[in-house]
Length: 609
Ligand code: M6R
Image 1 (cartoon, rainbow, N blue to C red):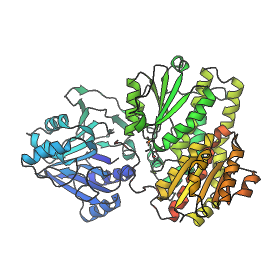
Image 2 (spheres, helix red, strand yellow):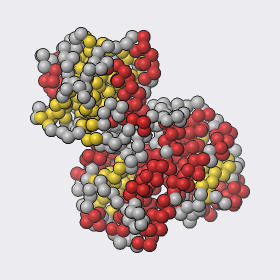
Image 3 (tube, helix red, strand yellow):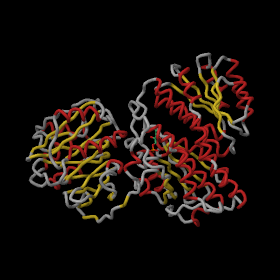
Image 4 (tube, rainbow, N blue to C red):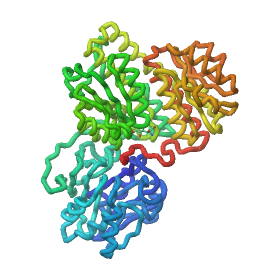
């Protein structure tokens, strides 16, 4: 939540900061602001609303200077308003601060500062930081920030500038991500690498309890208590074009249509030519250790949690190892029973989700081995887990997760096959068959995505309905949850995902002639049970939208609409059945004139609890 960009160098800071903020807007978009230093003076511009509103303000009142910080906000303390937008300044307006995270003890700190005569202008927790730095500042900005950091409880990524020190930009991190980009005669800070790709691919990742002093020529990293820390830059392989819309109307649309190539590249890079094995070069957890795994626990949030739920079916089928799945915010507090033979798999697009990170740390504390399945290169989860498998889906900018999900599922299939082979649970014939079938998935996905006319027709007829129900069974039950989540977050239409067998235990009461019910019913062991569910829905006047396998006439006879997917083994069907669900949510959101890439109240990375 919240995006931070900072710059120090020889170029004008404003356009660099603004372009960086645009790349980070998906992290928060209720207000935005910027501060630069010129002639010893800090100047601030801020505006409620999206970055475009700040950009308009900057056209009228540009900021000059070659050092600056900027911020796009997702409100935690204080309503979205110009006054609560960052940067925040001290009483003298010489110190400016941008912050991502939450200062949990800000009320106590604020009270003390008010008693000492400080005057506050906003309702935010962040403003205390500017006043504390002011309080401790005696010619040395670094020392003042260091003293301030010791008093802060909670989580933060910070960027600080001071009018008296136009040659220094200070950054600090505890619990919220912050990266440093290294340039020639210029350096940068940002919440994540996507803001910096246009300028540099050489990145230093700040860890918790670390701060950095940036000048245009140097970056000095130290611990909060002043010990110098040597860091080697990581070279990021993503390029700037991947973070652009590339001619699509929305990032989400582009990302949905990238799915066939993402799946193809995953299979291509991880599977041996003769389809006899799977490789995870970067994973680091030795095969010997994985061979001893007796239990798997999957921990994730949102869409990644749905990938985890599907992962339970996948991994149990392919490895014979029992799997439990938790949403991270429950897992971290429920005192999970884990041992050294437990493999905890955390799944996350961003690798920065606060609850998943906390779950991961709890798992490690309890002695489990942690494997992360993550998209964002170099993110905190990838650095703190025992091993990582990258989904390599490229930057996902749309707030609604699409290609990250199908990439997560693809990795789970491959990891299941890898572990199943290690455990001698799968024989070579079965492995070859499965991997050969996986090779066909990209082509099948392309076919489904091309068939959007039927989805547009359904959206046109039913975009105004108040509520949708999504039903699935077995491997396709999690996709019922995922389809409902996509519709809710994009269209603000209420949607419920249910295991179809549960329909008669309550949700059936909702069904009438105004209720569209999306039934995920590919060829599967539970196909006939789903047919009975569909008949029960029709008997009560419900509108049935079925996702079925090509040639399934029986389903189309009972459904108002049938969206076909190609014939595929049930195990692999979720990676295909989710595609029409994503398209449906997208087209309903368009019809309802929603902001597809930046739905209200959401942020791409949930970095606070
Ligand atoms: O970055 P993560 O995968 O850890 O994020 C998890 C959820 O916040 C995310 O999937 C969220 O639910 C998306 N908005 C769903 O589209």
